[in-house]
Image (tube, rainbow, N blue to C red; front, side, top):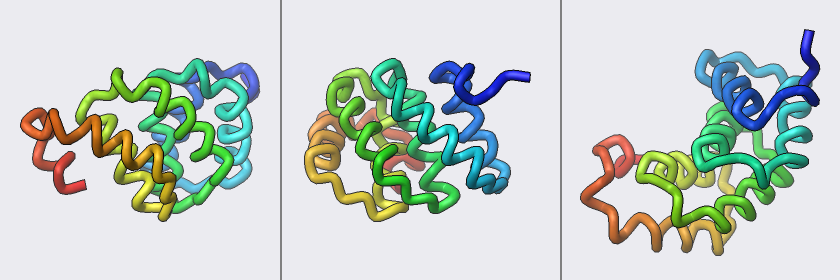
Length: 125
């Protein structure tokens, strides 16, 4: 059986997403995912970043160190974010009241020129 420290970026993100998607809140697991994600956040791609943020926000787990790590990595990769990832990340910040001005400004700057590319769900978020 693998331990959480053996998980790669996508496995961490997918596990958090799956638990949140089905409404299962396992705090020890989410704390372990957070700790492991923070250590490897630079390796997360945009989908891993936005899905991890979404998962923690969905279960209303405000994990400031994780969100700070996600924010730092997202700011470096903002030009790679597609409309869905932008919407998910913005929604996640709003859901847990994470008001990181540089990140929110970067999301807005990246989203405005691509408004026509957003799906109605993304605009609603």
